[in-house]
Image: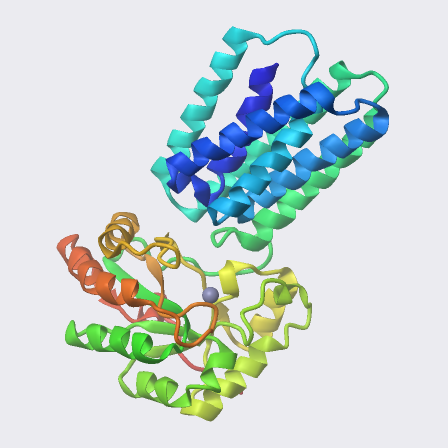
Amino acid sequence: MLAGGLVLPVLALAGSPVYEAPLMCAGALVVTVIVALLAWRFAARGAAGMTIAAVLVVVACFLANWVSYPGSGFVVAGLLGAGIGPFLPRQRVDVPLALAGCAVAVAVLSIVRALDSVSAAALVLALLTAAALALVLGAGARADRRISASILTGVAVCYALFSIFWIGSTDPHVTWFGALTWHGPRHSNEVALTFDDGPNGRYTLETANILQAHGVEGAFFFVGKAVVQEPEVVRQLVASGNLVGNHSYYHGAFSYLDPRYPELTQTNHAIYAAAGVCPAYFRPPHGTHTPFMSHVATDAGMTLVTWDASARDWVDTDAARVARRIVDQSKGGSIIDLHDGSDGNIGVDRSVVVRALPLIIEGLHAKGLKVVRLDKLLGKPAYTSKC
Ligand SMILES: [Zn+2]
């Protein structure tokens, strides 16, 4: 039974970016186990206590998807431990089952690491949902008969619905919540380079210079609040033949939930005022979208575009690794996602992309892939007349 409890945190952590740092992952697992054992020993097992424990498991699994730094990883690991502990039976540890659980955990971890893409998070989330349901319903029902099955079922259903919402709104490849484009034609050898979160002063301009030196053009998804601060950079990008797209106005974490999504037109107006063009391509921050947002974008004659190649360049400082990941993931039709800025904040050091870009372009060419501008890859105009 202890194994059942151990598999879950590993799955949760595997689904988070912590999996890229195996030591951190192992540390978080240790935290989970220690807290789980403490909770196993000391937590109250009444109906209220067990309900709180079940909610903690659900909250921790959900939060695991947002873990991006070691600190938050350990907090989530602790929450998981506190939730799992009370569900473990008081009797004894089943060693063969514990080993089997660890084997499953290692296998899942390996799969996730091999996939190394955002859609892997969706896969792990599905596995997690199944594991959480099994743990909460199975172990919980056995551990304490006083727990109301209806409370546990309610928690499980809420978690499943929450998961569906999370995958639908955040997976850049899932179209449950409205049309989006995440790659071009697979039969071609063309790929498109895209850059998010600028304009960002010299980093955006240096990125554009490297593209020009290699005779290629990119698509820059700009954040409205930065556009009004650096209109000249936007103008220069358009003048040098790059495509400028819309990447929200504030780049906030939750503004995508506003069904009217006013940031779309706000940003188009800012870009039009700066450079006289009205973007036809929109990339939602973090790829998060809702059906309402899709409707607003479609009504404005815009295409919602995500990506299929991404290298976590916003947290990595190793240019060679970023380049290798991008080149490995890229195939015919790929839309490559890099960041010349950070959330629309001007002045953030993005030299890693400046250093990685020549390696990426050379790597793509060596692979037989040809870099084209996003609108050419997708066969739709870069700008609309509606602004
Ligand atoms: Zn962004």
